[in-house]
Image 1: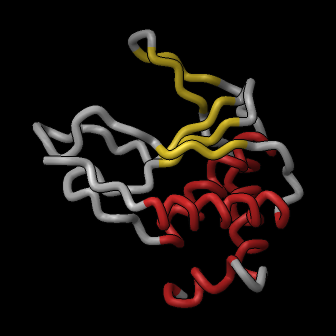
Image 2: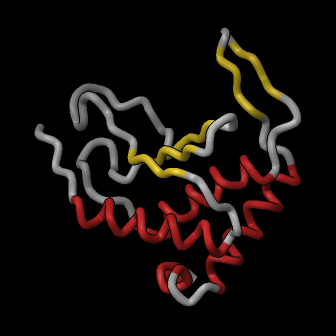
Image 3: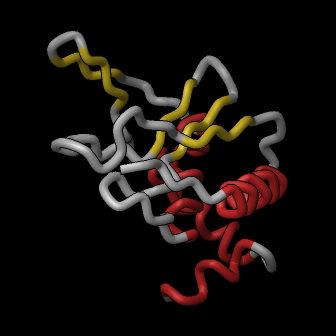
Amino acid sequence: MSDVIDPRHEALVEHLFQRMLVVLEMPGFELRPMRRRTRGEGRLRSIVYGYTRLDKKLVTIDLYTPRTMKTRKMDAILRVVAHELAHHQKPPRLYRSWFRLVREIHHPPFWTQYRRNVAKMQKDEILGIYFKNNQ
């Protein structure tokens, strides 16, 4: 299966990401779309929608569904970005280690910050359009 990447979709996501940084007052972050080696082939075990690096201002988001390479809904992408930016606003206090895999613990202040981010996006005149259909 060949990778079908829509440059218009990626450009729109980048534009909305920059708008989100203005709304949340968090300048200097960079967005990268997640690239996978094999799309739609074999067993798809990854359920990761995005990740961030706390030491760098970098957010990586999966813009397409794993098997069919369809574009994800815009409100889902914006919620994932709000989630990843909340990691920078309220960093984790504890880490959990499991078989040399270190995961951060999502604590209650983190989820409060995530809800604030989504509420700010819903109030914005540009970003709020993408949340109207799901309310």
